[in-house]
Length: 213
Ligand SMILES: Nc1nc2c(ncn2[C@@H]2O[C@H](COP(=O)(O)OP(=O)(O)O)[C@@H](O)[C@H]2O)c(=O)[nH]1
Ligand SMILES: [Mg+2]
Image 1 (cartoon, rainbow, N blue to C red):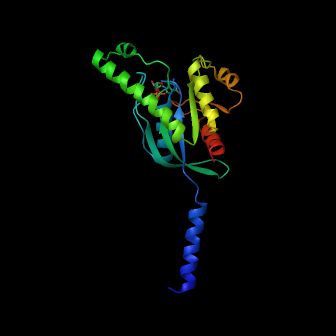
Image 2: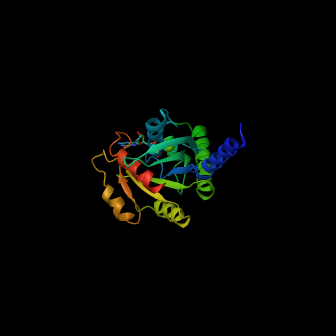
Image 3: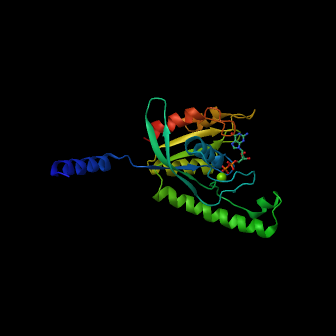
């Protein structure tokens, strides 16, 4: 190979390495049962053709952070983002094993689950400090957004100066009130969605491409 071609190849490798867009790690945070794993699975299915984790009616089914890497999401205007999706355990201020007994687990299983969930929450908080570039904060539109844990989490995310989108989930349910979420967090984009039915999910993808670029 002549020296000119070699130099040219080296230069174009340098350029593409230099301009290659960084992959962003997007964490899905929010209280237990908001639909975080359902969303992570939908994103993975829509953009990679498979799923991330198990969905359950029992709170704290996701007790470790689960990751799906290298998803390319594109918007209508031709822009796209390459992201890793991190599905986190629900963040709460209190995890009580007795809560799990109501779901038919025996005491030992319930205690193990509560301990794992507590560790999972600590892990998710650590990731938020060290490892996350943007957040989809997920709320159930049928429950009160003004809970201490939401105010605290949004406050932490803001103090880290991370871009955040609030997803107001479960709008398929009759008593969903996504406008309450809008008025609770007017400083952030709020996208009403139903992860279960896929309603408005395209709008969330558009907002992700816009906010996380
Ligand atoms: N009606 C309704 N239920 C949903 C929706 N998204 C999730 N769920 C249900 O809410 C429960 C908790 O979902 P999951 O994804 O495990 O929540 P996570 O704890 O935040 O990960 C499950 O029973 C889901 O099927 C939604 O958009 N509408
Ligand atoms: Mg989950």
